[in-house]
Length: 393
Image (cartoon, rainbow, N blue to C red; front, side):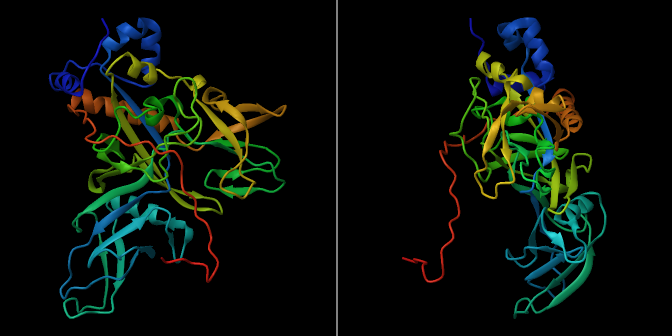
């Protein structure tokens, strides 16, 4: 008889301490030892994780009102611009925003992590002044405890696969995929492979709006589909996309987060980014679900694309699996090329284990999505329109 489980049944087992929880790496050997049928009966939850640079990240902050009050129109945090076009004392600071005085060596990601660490942040704000908000400037310091809300809201995190990067030109390229040496001297990639959340649930059966997650060391939620979300893409025989596909918009309380699981990053001659740690618990609902969860690096493929071509659609030089990428070298066009991960496998493993502990010890239950994401067949692109050619009708 085929085993079927529900979120409710699994949550009851979590609450009474009988749930069997393993990581996405551990489940591979369990399936090999027990077989799919017995493993489906035995295991209830598989924890997945990633720790990678996620540029589309940032934080909403509410500073509280001053006396006399001010409607902030320009805001600097440690000399990094934050967007104040929200309300009187609300602002959003993006991870990739850079400092006026330190350029890419210090940016929004650093401000977010310094705030999270309990450090004082220099707040400078100006306003034209209004009858109800007469104050025109303020210069003070804030901490995470002195302000009201501080929550991470990341519009595009947790990519479902991503192309590996190479450079066929004769000059060094400085990119968000790191430094790419000329003449195909290196390949950079960014995923935790068989541990990565969306690679373990390729059709997003259990991940949608409302899904409870591990976000930078604190409980968080999937708020919406991420930007640049697409589902109708090239897939392998196992259903796993072979290129970038789904993404997640995620939210969580910054005040509860830990700098162990979120870190600023500086990419040479490119800009600022932020490493974000995300873990997603996936319930073993049936045998098909477990088959996806037991996916191995050798069965997850991605394209090697040429970043020296200055356009959105970069040519593929071929496909490669993550076992090959993880080996440290890939043979391409008869040449052995060293490979380097931008994501941290050790951090991803730590997150998967910590999330496992939350479920087993802290009774962290699973949340069934209250809305699943729809299918998206293509991404729109931005076309430049010349002056005088804009049609406003």
